[in-house]
Length: 360
Image 1: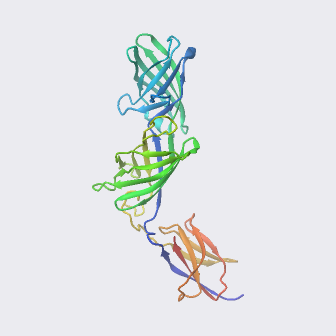
Image 2: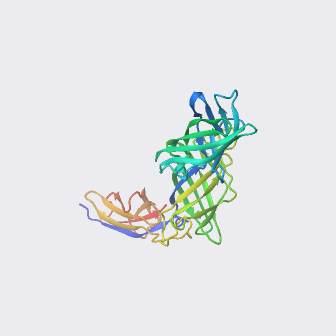
Image 3: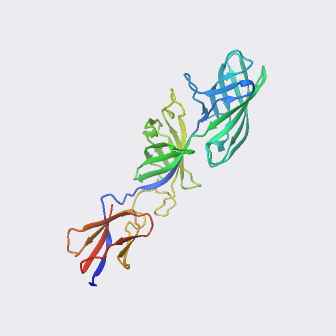
């Protein structure tokens, strides 16, 4: 067999701006409105919730007061000649808005009014299994004038999406994209750009979400209408950022703007310089070693190039027969899925060969 020498050039060529590396955090966004289906009670009595003046959208919306949520309603009661409309409000347990938790229990102190006709109290009995977006809520309406009107059993839906947020940090801002899948419905997605501007006086812990446009699975636009709401980093948990996202219309399928207010949380475990501040809001820079670690060994039928990742994960492998060559030949490209990753290379045909990698 022809003898040869295989050399590895211990270095890496970087494309322009490669030191500002993209990172990935995990995002979760949940609507603070719940979607209620029609509730039914004895003797074919029904109760619909809606915040729309033109149709029934099923929205139970946040009040940011006590009780925590409100809606309009249409009550079709067996003892009434015609359906009646009014306003209703009652508390929702916090656990309802996190699909990973079991939600159960009864909330008291709610109420309803039918202007000039009737008013009364509302109790809400909640049930939703951990991991499910769907649950059951039984609303008990008790009229001051007529007594108990019935137990109305509703199915309700938590509207929640989770997925990666890919971002690139900068000194004064963070830009990126989200690709989120709805809990319990993988066919439903939210995608789009995000931009956060760091607060000058507290840039590691406070960021303001900028206006933008996301899309749902039907390519309908969801415009972020935030008045530059502040996102805060949780000082105890360290890696969690959270804040409100306000859409001009959170459900384009309905006739009016509704399902407007959502809570977005971002979990970023990346901390390249191990200073306790996630890369999401930390000052950017080549934290750690930006260069990959390279080694070359011979297998039975080929060469084995080992690449231990630097700040880049995508590389082009180049070969030359002499270090004096100005033109290196690209022989392969690889995106690392392991660290280190072994890349097989063919045995060279020349007596001497050199290899190097270029970050993409």
